Structures are given as structure tokens and as C-alpha cells.
Image (cartoon, rainbow, N blue to C red):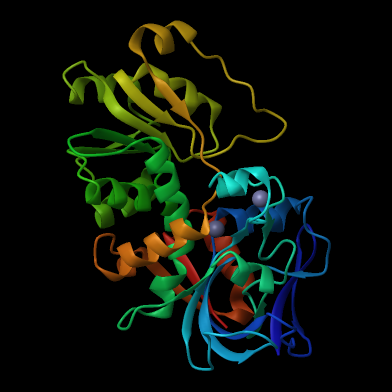
Length: 346
Ligand SMILES: [Zn+2]
Ligand SMILES: [Zn+2]
């Protein structure tokens, strides 16, 4: 079968390898869609300390069961499935307390296990053990189902930031994650959603699709000023930074309303993670700052349902569909910000 394997930074190869075999407790799937995201670009450029090459990449996975290993019950060939990306151990203190997104023993598809840029893939027994294999509802396509994984991360972020009825929400970053944040905030009853980006072209493309109440280009506008104007000086109830930018995180505090919530959804570069934060804003305005680290199996299930029942439409966000042989083009398109969602159809 054909796979796209990471060998070293800058070195991803399309290769012919034997089809994998389902061991005890595993499920083997025919991958139908594996979507790409900024993380794939990061791995391509810099590698990752959890990846020991060669490794098949790809973690936004949907496909069809073709075989099950010894002892597997409840799954049969032909079942259409979506697969979680982050695998909590299910046994540590955090997992037992229900904090699966911060399991210190977490492993990931495409990192510790071969991922979805392949014609066939093994869903490891560890995923089934934490209920991380989800049935795709009838009528929902594989490409849309593959977006359940990033939406699950967005859902985790908005639950932690308590996005809800009547909120004014600012989303900083208009990539696929930013677009999902806009759509999810609307489905949770946000009153107005403002989308911010430095890249005017990408912002225009995203705004065209997700129709925020205002699109603010940080390259030519003072974002804090603009948000304060739009909210009558109050600021936004929730500000979500879906960009790897310390400056955006610092600005977020300046445009958050009293008792508002700030989600540092996107992480910062490892070598530059320190920001200047006005602690008195947090104190006197009773602000809450939250993080977000991926998603749990339960978030994946709920995200898949939100897509299937139309609460969070994603079909129009999938702007490019490419075959496995063009995975490098896909990564290039993503890194240039020239697409919303690029999906690979192996
Ligand atoms: Zn991703
Ligand atoms: Zn754990």
C-alpha cells in the first residue's frame, strides 16, 4: 500500500509498504479521508520530539473498517468510523478524574502510531479501550467526519472558556481552527462573533465562508481599539487566540470585558513562550484565563454529532481534496494559508 512517511524535517516520502495487520484488540481501517492542519506543517518543517522516524503522518482520520483483531467486539467490516488523535491512558489520576485532555501519558496518532496518510491504518487497541473509535452517522461524508477531530479541540477550548448565550466573542486567527471557533460560538448562542487576522487575504477568504459580524485585519487596524468600539467600550466576553502569537495573547487582555474569559487556545513557540501580562487587569476585572490542550474521546463524539446534526457545518470549509501522492502540495497549501481545510483522500 501507499503511505506518506516522515523521515526527517523537510523529508516526507510517498512509499510502498506492506499492509499493516490487526493485532489482538486492534481494528484495521481503509482510510477514506485524513485532513491536514498546521501541526502537519510544523512536523514537516521541524519534526517532533515524540516522532521516531520513519512514521506515517496524519491525525484527522475517517475511514471504513476492513478487519478486526482477536477479541474485538462491536465492529465489523464496512462500519464507517472516525478516529481520535490524542490517546489518553485511561488509568492515571487525571484520567480517573475525567481530565483526559491533560493525561501525562497521552500518545498520538501520527506520532507514536502510524497515522492516516496511508491507504490502510491500524486503530490501536488503546484507542478502543478509551472509546475513541466513533461510528459516523448515516448521511455524513468521510471528509466532514474527519473534521470532528479539530472541532473536538475547539469544543474543549470553548467549554473551558464557557462560551455561551449572549456572549460577544473575538476569535484571533482565521485559519481552519478560527473558522471552527466562529461556527461553534454561534451554535452555542454567542450574540456576536468578531474574526481577527494579520493576513488580509486569508481573513477575507475565511470571512466569506463563516460570516463573522466583523472581520478585523490587524495589519491595518488597531485590533484592541476596533473591538472596544464594536462593543461600546465594554470589550468582548470571550477572546480566543487561535494563533501562535504572544502579542495576540497580550492584546487579548486589553479587549476583554469585566468578568470575561480569555482562551490561550494556540500555544506559543517553545523557545519564546513568555508574555507580559497586566495582572491588575485580571484582578480588578475578574478575568479568567484558560488554556486548551487537544480533546478527549468524549469531545470527539460530541463534535461528530455537532457536525452530523448541522449545528456546526463543515462541508464548505473543506476547500481542497487531494490524493495521497500530493501530500506535499497539501502541506505547502496549508503553510501558505491558501486554503481553509485541505483533506487527503488516500
Ligand atoms: Zn490537526
Ligand atoms: Zn491518563
